[in-house]
Image (tube, rainbow, N blue to C red):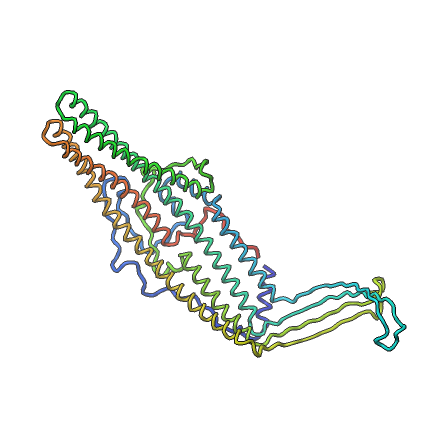
Length: 489
């Protein structure tokens, strides 16, 4: 801390102001919002994961938002991922690197001090002095301490430090973005695993039902009640249904590999935790940050702001490079023919120098570098606005998705129940000979599609709920699940 304080004192000791623009963070958009109308509660359905969700405008986001799913397995997996994911480790190292670069730049506020010792042995000739017969050897020992200082008259160094601090801030929010991305990916992977397990279970139930139907047809065929073609049709239907299992099982295996990688594990050592939709609780009270706070909470927006700040400081650096540069140097030391007499009386040497350099003609390089810095600032400003717009779009899309998910689940639930009743009726009627095999197969196909669609609709609500927490910034400002990365002052 003392080093940083000395750097600040050295900077403000100069009366002049730093050249270039003084950065001001962009104000939060005054008229921005997520939806044209007021958000309404989502639809409710009497099925697992079908509760109505309420949007609490202005409510803050918890740091450990994934705990709202009330899954100990999910909590454990997130904890392991935060402790062992290499992408997170890389982001932490990048922040430390940026911090050290800032401290290195601050070193330019201070004088430089160096020590030098040289020993010279030479043969000389007196011919140059009109004494050709006078020649011999000379040993010379020189020890010096050199001090140099470049006063930051126009603030170029201050702007360089400002740019380095902005780069450090950028890495700080890149780290927060890495935390948010990792936790969101873990939750999304867990939900996807649960969805795949439910789809596999549903498909296996359907395969069993189709197998039972085939057994019944074989019995009827043996009794001469049905034609061979009916058995062949049911056999083909069963084979087609069984063919849908391997792709789902492949996706599940790949999802388990993804979860292992997120947790910092190799595929042959997957985590013990497994996930089912029944073990997850759908959060029903959802915090929705005020639009005016979104730009403060989103790590990508804060990182874009830091990039804009850095670009602003670089204009000052380029401007200062066009102005006079001042240098103060001083040397003090001793010079003697033998080491033993280096500090004897009369061997001391010293020098003091002051200089100023004014660039006069550099082929337009300095001017164009300044213009390039101004253009980079304009680009960063446009990119910042683009990031803000994307962040609001992200939240708006997720809010719409949640409402649509609830409506879809309601419709898919009704469709699945209707299809199930229709299939049961068709099976009873087929046993009585009231409907054809084709009609029964059509009823089975409709139910199969409705069952899978219901599972997918249930999973979508969990996944998009997690996406909302991510879109709102993930509550990193309240995070207590991992130790914050501390920079050393």
